[in-house]
Amino acid sequence: MNSCNKKIILASASPRRRELLSQIGMEFEIRPSGASEQTKGTRPAEIVEELSALKAGEVFDALSKEERADALVIGADTIVALDGRIMGKPKDPGEAALMLGRLQGRTHQVYSGVTLVWQGREDSPSRIRLSFHEKTDVAMFPMTEREIERYVATGEPLDKAGAYGIQGKCASHIRGLRGDYYNVVGLPLGRLCQEMKKAGLMAAD
Image (cartoon, rainbow, N blue to C red; front, side, top):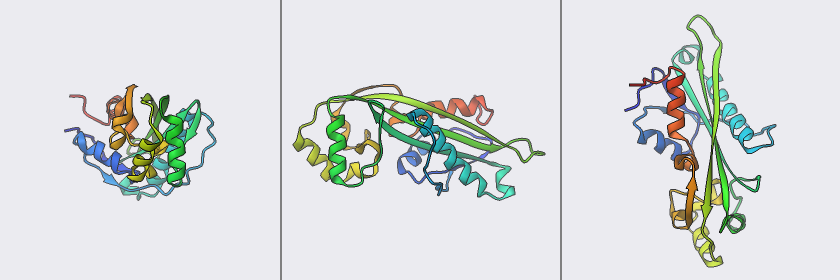
């Protein structure tokens, strides 16, 4: 059980992030962000940190004064990059197949940015914001056109960055990875808990 001294609010509707937080026994409330996902960043690490901050900030701003005093908002964003080129969620099955065709047999990077927002001292309305990111290298086995077609037909790639889910049916095509597995799923759990401990938001016992 992971104890936090504030009420945790997850600024995301992602079922995968919800499952990950539940996995480590963290109690939280879900309030999806409606922030526009526009960024000035150009590098993947900059982009995920900025987007996670926009999401967390938007949800924190929407809280009442009373809620802010006891809340910790967690925002997150994940992207896939191949040769520095960002690959978002596919618009349709055809685009999903194209993305998988580029990824197959190669190593790509998955970046997740996380931002924590909470109020400072009780006698101060100032907020505290902490942002960080993790990167994981993911290598995929070569895939035949038929394998790509079958995977796309499952519908699993259509709501995922890079058109695949490492925790789903695409697991059979993953050669290996270097870095945090949970980062690829959508939330670097270990880093999140360590940052919360360092900020005094979670007990270190």
